[in-house]
Amino acid sequence: MKIGILGGGQLARMLALSGYSLGLEFIILDPSKEAGATGLGKHLQGQYDDPTLLAKLAEEADVITYEFENVSAEATRFLSQHTQVYPAPNALSIAQDRLQEKNFFHQLNIPTANFATIASLEDLQQAMTHIAYPAILKSRRMGYDGKGQVVLKSSDQLAEAWDAMQGVASIVESFVPFQREISIIAAKRASGEIVFYPVSENIHSQGILRVSECCKNDGLQRQAEDYVVRILTALDYVGIIALELFDVNGKLFANEFAPRVHNSGHWTIEGAETSQFENHLRAITDLPLGSTEAREHTAMVNFIGGLPLTERILGIPHTHIHLYDKAPRKGRKLAHATIRTGDFAQYSQSLQRLKILAESTDDS
Ligand code: AMP
Image (tube, rainbow, N blue to C red; front, side):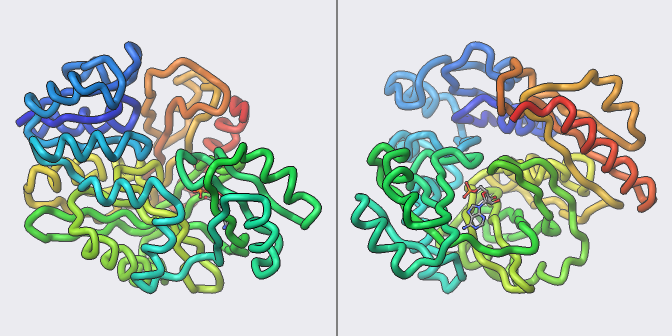
């Protein structure tokens, strides 16, 4: 069976690597000659909305998926007229627009920060009469890793903040005073089976994920599962989904969902019985889903902008490395490392060393 993937970065690379053992082949559409996954399948080099390449992809692939949200929903709609596209284009178009996404959470009674839609400075001034400071102004579309966001601390910042958005449709939302950020990753198969991974606790800095730790038996696991099931059911969803949540005194508020494999689930490669990548492929090819049980203590650390020598990373006990084959660039995710061990003291020590090592080459 041949799987088509829109995007050839590290997520496609890890999907393809896990798919070989399932006997799957890959065809990958990506504009870049050097994209990290392109050596793992047939590469269609060109833009994501190129009609000739999309037609070719639809013809050759048995099932199509995507590795990031900023592919055109229109292109996935076109593809879905010819072949199966999972997750369905509808999930993608909601996740692409922060306003639609927040309204969708509300329809499902999933709490979020207070928010308002913004199309002008007047809208922003008006909204900030009822939304508390600090708040965050975010572009509705094309935002990731904290891009297209401005923090608002007081009313004298509004004009400058709106200028910085260069007139793009936005939302403003109140800053959630969270104790923790967590995410839940779940998979749903076309025939209905759903599995959940243990929630991850995620540390971000400047809007970019740095560290994810698997939280076995977390007190908020059930609440997170309840919210993600509402989304899976409402969207008639197939594949892996990640829901990012803020924990405020034990009550969860949704931030966003990603209709794809997710950085906060990379620990599942070594740390779970079945990785998120394998379960995504099982889900979209309608195979029985694998156990999501976490093995031992496990966490993941991202390497951003720069990379220490592999030898130094692997010199930390119980560490595994995943290099993305990407040229270093400021703020770019180049690799991640996972720790897994049954010895908690050893786990804490290795995680601490890995964080310090990652910070030493982080240029963001
Ligand atoms: P986003 O692009 O919406 O995922 O935001 C990136 C990161 O910025 C989040 O993971 C949080 O660390 C932070 N953030 C975004 N929105 C909020 C908010 N309303 N309250 C507090 N922190 C936020």
